Image (cartoon, rainbow, N blue to C red; front, side, top):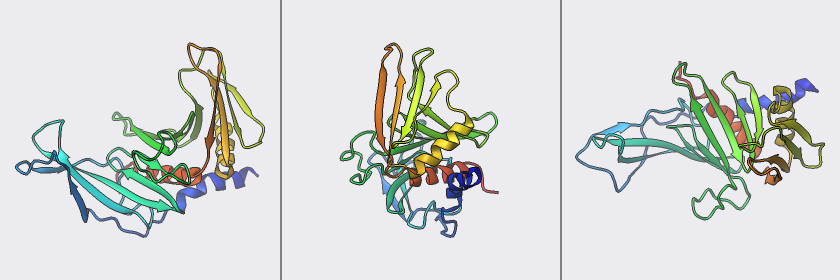
Length: 241
């Protein structure tokens, strides 16, 4: 059982296609209204380092705009848009951030999609040792991969001292932990396996300074695909050898 759970959890990492070559330069380039023709164009350093697209349906687009950090050049940023198993995604190569369709009716439109209803991927890099971690968020649920490659689960933020956090996937038995200890690696692995086949998840925690439960139901539509993409981004956040 444990072996099959780990295969289900981490096997998704290898489902992303590696056969599609990504263009170094974008065929589709958009020039923002801030673009200055008299200034040079520099490439934004990529957090995601790949020589292939994330999926076979992916398309690379670039946008050129004024570099507001220096005002002495324009900056070109790279995004990838596509779908995985019918689920839409948008990835920013500069920082590893991504939006993944979180409801069947969503289209990743910045205005039409209700805020917080899509899966959001974010990554951080430690400039001291180049280690990194990535997380997937929706509602009060956060699922991610630490610097050492282990998975983690967290619920909410700014917890009330000595309170607890609880998660329940579908009608499965709830799992409760203290806010001090959080979920262990083994618990996180078990939860992620359940999330991959679940329909909805209910989270509960107490936020400072109010000592009252905050319950938040979250639709798991698109979670398996978002988790697969997060693994691919995490793996790609180091230079290609």
